[in-house]
Length: 335
Ligand SMILES: [Zn+2]
Image (cartoon, rainbow, N blue to C red; front, side, top):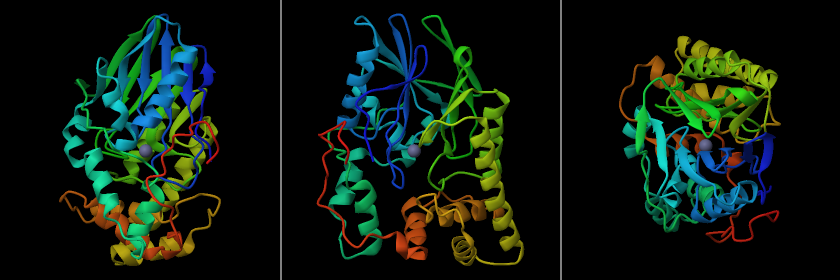
């Protein structure tokens, strides 16, 4: 596992911050698009320390006069937006649906306090500590978009065209993807996970498939997933096959009359993609799809859904977890 001290160049003027953290939650990719003295950042990291590390790496590839004056959030989850507050002078752009659903996100300090109360003898709370206890959320506040759009928004970053395309509801209610046509790069946000079983909170999974098809329709050269390494169109197609198989199986189990948790148990038992991390997320995908099949419109109880997933997949709970927070001060080092 590795937090990068430098950005990876994908194309001239397009550089990515790619944490290598398979099998865990919260360590998301960010992409810097720059031209002359203008710079746009796609997504911000989960903590202030990570955001400062990313910013330092960004300024090593930018001209001295350049400023990150635009931040784009692919969706409202904290691992893609908690760092927004470290760009107080930037315009922060996202979809109107993402702004509307920001109220469902916990304040970073609330999340920190919740983790402070987690007990090591409770399996779910130990799971939470294992995955989120490494992050230090103190000193951050939810910082909402200052500019929103519906459908599509075209921007110029210096002389580089950047297209924001709304593809939600899919992973969340308001997902967007970022297309940089000159370089053939698409930033997928969390409609695409690489290396781990995906998690999708809004759905339906058909919406995720449609979002991925929108990516392929752009004929990209490189696709930056929300989490995991860079991929090309072939890997996006394979991911769609995987999502399609999961969706079809869930629909069949629903048609047989199985309840949500019974169906999730079947998905977990039949799962063969052991090279992917976080297989407990199959239970979240089942719950999300069942909500659509059963036409449930109440707000999703995230902790309840994740708690059920951990209970159904007890092997995902580690026997011990380190003291928290594990301050990621030694950024750039292997952890
Ligand atoms: Zn994410």
